Image (cartoon, rainbow, N blue to C red; front, side, top):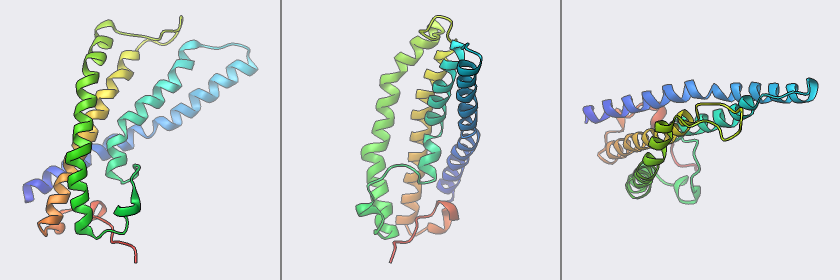
Length: 183
């Protein structure tokens, strides 16, 4: 059980690091978008590569931080059944949900997007806009990062569920424990 706990902590640490680093892209998105507007309306000019940049940064940020959002419980969930559930019931719901939905979803994303991403990398794909940014292949690569970080966090959730079901919640770090049901 201690080994499982170590794996869970390592996965959580990786997703925490990725989330903390890539969440700063939100600031970059705002600054780039602001500058594009300033250039357009104050200087009557525009740079197409900058217009490509902020939606690309947005895509990178959201795909990179998906595992972190799952770790921090900031994802969309149907709380009708989950919120009032006991810790044990939440563990069972997560165990079933991860096995039936999350891991298969991550596998489908990886499987069906790998060829798409690999082709983009092979072609060193850039913007479709003339004069646009190069490096679209890097952005598309984050689709696979999304699948991996989501699947890894799913494994962490599985481990947490197993530990709680086996009565070893003490091996789950405090911030990652299930919240008690509201009274």
